[in-house]
Amino acid sequence: MARLLVLGGSWFLGRTVVEDALADGWEVTTFRRGQGGTDVPGVTLIRGDRTKSEDLNRLAAAGPWDAVVDTSSFVPRETLAIATALAPVVGRYVLISTVSVYEGWPVEPLTENSAVLECPSDAGPDFGYDGDPGPSTYGFGKAGCERAVAEVFGPDRTVLLRPGVILGPYEYVGRLPWWLHRVARGGRVLAPGQPSRSVQPVDVRDVSAFALHTAKADGPVGTFNVTANGRETMSDFLTACQRVTESDATFTWITDEEWLAAQGVAQWTELPLWRTYRGAWAVDSAKARESGLTTRPLFDTATATWAWLRSGTGTVDHERASEQGIDPDKERTILDAWDARERSRNDAR
Image (tube, rainbow, N blue to C red; front, top):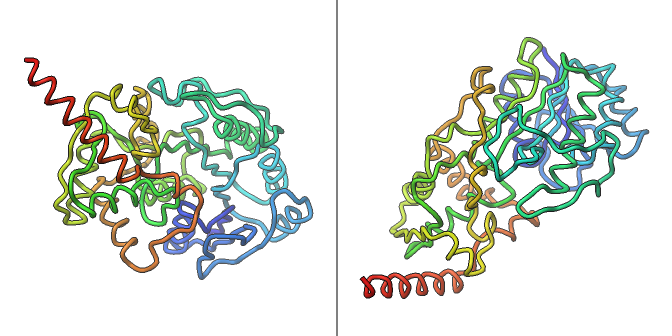
């Protein structure tokens, strides 16, 4: 039986990876502090802190493993330490990174050959800076984590996965849950931007499946963008939310995005997934598809997430969820202002 180590394993993607690995017949060990999230039954638990050398030594002594999937690396020097400890006892290292490592994110279309932010492998948590619209200290940190793994494990044992927005059951950020709850409430819904705009959120289960595919001894190695194929639109996304919740909501599309931004609406958070930059949903994942990535329709993701939310277990106590969504009064005020604007424009014709 193949042995898998998961760093993290209790939140969203990590939890999904663990559940899928167990279902696929892996023997799974998780390494985490245990201060939040949920332990998945059936795994071997090793409690520890990646910032403590004694904990890393104790972890390495529990090996070997065929692969490690790291869902919780953010600080390069910590990733460098854990990669160094695990190198003698792990076959390959699968690091969950992000498209935020690219210099051009979210302004430019991206491929795996696009320039990556410069960050040393031993950098601390404050390396880099936050720009508008980018880059970010988060992106710098992830770039440094990538470098750390690549330096220790080398090209033949390193897998770097760069997802964009991940949605699905167990989502703690709250993007899709917010939209589902908002659409379920019904009435007029402020729909941002062009309904025909292509979007690329990827289902957590598809990221998990590809991560486990690359974790296998005969799986592909290298760097892969992991996004949906871009064939669905923002209208498809909101329609999926409406169908799944069986809502009577009607969508008012505010297509003048400069006007909408001028109303003080925060992109990405107040109206989750809305971002005006041309590169936000222009990430090429053809390489991953050629290597085995498959992605499911947004309707399937919305269906599974709504079922989870209604199951009684579909709540996640996480600080990031409070960032999502526009205040109902603010939404109504903007819709009223948009109506007045459109009446004035029509009267002027």
